[in-house]
Amino acid sequence: MAGPKKEIDPTWTQTLIRGIRNGETAALAQAITLVESTRPQHLEMANTIVEENLKNAGKSIRIGITGVPGVGKSTFIEVFGKLLTSKGKKVAVLAVDPSSTVSRGSILGDKTRMQELVKDAHAFIRPSPTGNSLGGVAKKTRETMVLCEAAGYNVILVETVGVGQSETAVHGMVDFFLLLKLAGAGDELQGIKRGIVEMADAVVISKADGDNQKRAKMAQQEFKRALHLYPPKSNGWVPKVLTCSALNGEGMDQIWDMIGGYLDTAVASDHFHQKRKEQNKYWLLNHLDELIKDHFHHNNEVSKALQRFLETVGNGKISPFKAAQKLMQLYHKSLKI
Ligand code: GDP
Image 1 (cartoon, rainbow, N blue to C red):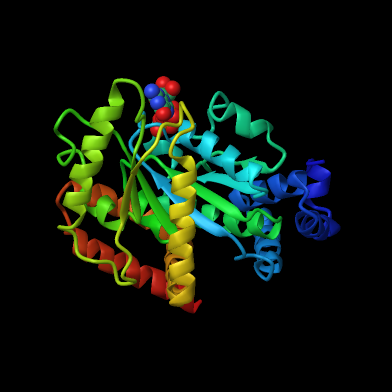
Image 2 (cartoon, helix red, strand yellow; image 1 turned 90 degrees about the vertical axis):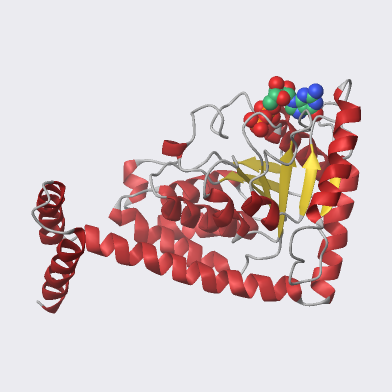
């Protein structure tokens, strides 16, 4: 379906919008490719498609899943995703990690991951968009989420590798944030990044099977105690600590029930909608930052001057502050022309 001719066909945008509304995965996948494209002619089409689909978006549960590489995220998502599709849900799996900062193969692009879910007609898996800036990738993931929702996916799982800053970005785009952790040999607390634990609505100790089962239970108790040391969440939710084994399919139902419990409470207290409203504001500011940065860096004159200043700042001939000030003056001047 995709091809250079179609890319400049003005009716193509409408075809994709209709296709998404009808839940066609080919149209969805192509629209996402447009969203991820850096070509200016695609940007306008992508913006129209996202804008048109916004009114059909939002009717989903957005769940962030984080954890260090090897903790079992893809195995978990595969089994959890299958459970959800068996319950009649339509599940989309997205990833937020700029490819430059994550070792290749550990992200969703690897075809060997989630082999069962890939084959599931009620699941849609999209690898992480490529890009260097987290802000840009996060924006693309948010827009992809909108398109998936408009296509009828009612559970969106957003994965991140839990080693960078992307958790904050994911936390800012989901309703529920789940941290997967391994039971360590007595060092459970040392491995935790405080910021990430603070964001988590639930901590799930993975691989609770075989010899590891006992350790997982111990880690669960320790985490429960540790979580009391964190400040309470503004919505009154006390983060839960569960265990699971994706290998044996154990603990998955409890995790889904827990998320359901959270949603019931959050919707009843209106915190759910308040949070989404706040996230929309955050998206606006975030997107604005990206647009301003783009505009600045795409200015030819400014960009050339920046290269020169990078040299002179490197040589110590001018201070970084003075250079930045001069660049801004140049930028402002160019805006007036
Ligand atoms: P990711 O890097 O976080 O996505 O982790 P993977 O899902 O790729 O899993 C890393 C390794 O842990 C793989 O060898 C999996 O087979 C194994 N693994 C994943 N889940 C479980 C589990 O529930 N139990 C056990 N014993 N091993 C698991």
